[in-house]
Image 1 (cartoon, rainbow, N blue to C red):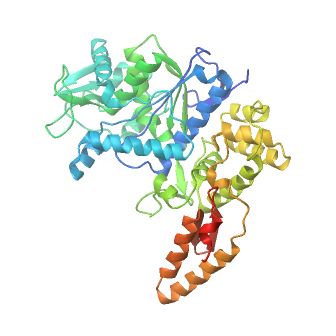
Image 2 (image 1 turned 30 degrees about the horizontal axis):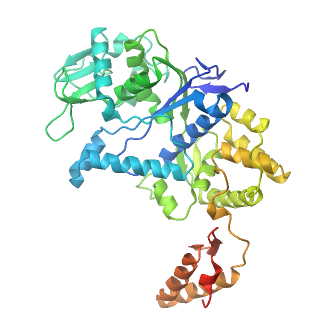
Image 3 (image 1 turned 135 degrees about the horizontal axis):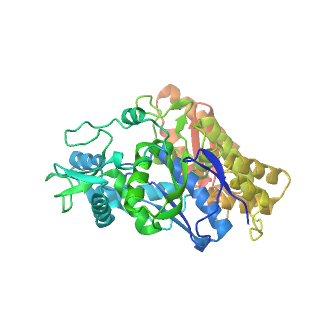
Length: 455
């Protein structure tokens, strides 16, 4: 059996991973709040923990790994979006949930074993809140139920912060009904224009933190192996999850290993709308960036290091993938997984090292190992994607034609000829990319030369 070592955020060291039950390895990852398209940063944890899911399945067996990733579909941002658009909350969350699944599938993310929606587990949340009240860890005040942070001695161990730092980091809401500024909301009242459910504490809705505690308990039990998410969730969300889960179920350990991925930058800067470098996964896909390319770039940086998305990295990733796909198109993928790849991923999910090993496989013509390893990393399915299996054809004539038409159009401002040529190329199965650097034509697997006759 492969010896796996993972960095545990709670103990701040790399530890040998020994599952609680090797017949049922259990992992919970905090999923998205579904009010809009997933931005590029949202894709990083989805890809990181998808690789971990695939790896654990390879080591322990597909049927012996349970992966839960939730959807938060009750939230003030969703309420605001409903108010702005006049649409119902359910319409918005149904649509955005499907957007998320489609976009993540485009970057090779498998669907987890379970994908609970918060609104479908309100009863479990109310049960946990009632349990916390009965044990003296929560109290009711002015229609709210709050967790008493002072009742849990180990609060702050995950983040390693002092009380003063935690108060500042959580942007603590000052409210007269709180016994302590650090106490956080488990249940809050709802008005007529916000969603709500009847409860012993009045008509209202759950706080954010209780969602994951209740759903993980219902699906994975009071102790499970791995809890993951972005490092922006470490405090206060994960800290609060630990407190309320350990207090509600004191005989359990909640999560044994905590894993957090670092954040994402774009061209060396924090992604933000004000800087004009904010984009969604769908923005990139619609702009012609391939899902496999997005995934490759993500995997080229270790999950615990900040990842910098750059156009140069994307172009290099595509060149690499095209070369690999050409080699593995007819490869035998029935062989076992190479030990080198398993060992790389066993080193705290070292995907950059795994990619370097794929380069070695490609250079030494170990094609079967290359193919099976690409599948494990989610860089291809049973076979290379259709865009990568195009025939070897010379399109330089059409490339020159389009470049010349584009140059003329830049002078005349009449782009009808450019549009005509592009339309014919696209109809023939040719991807057209135009940038300040020039024109690039990429034939797909469905390329039909006959549709270019007479052009």
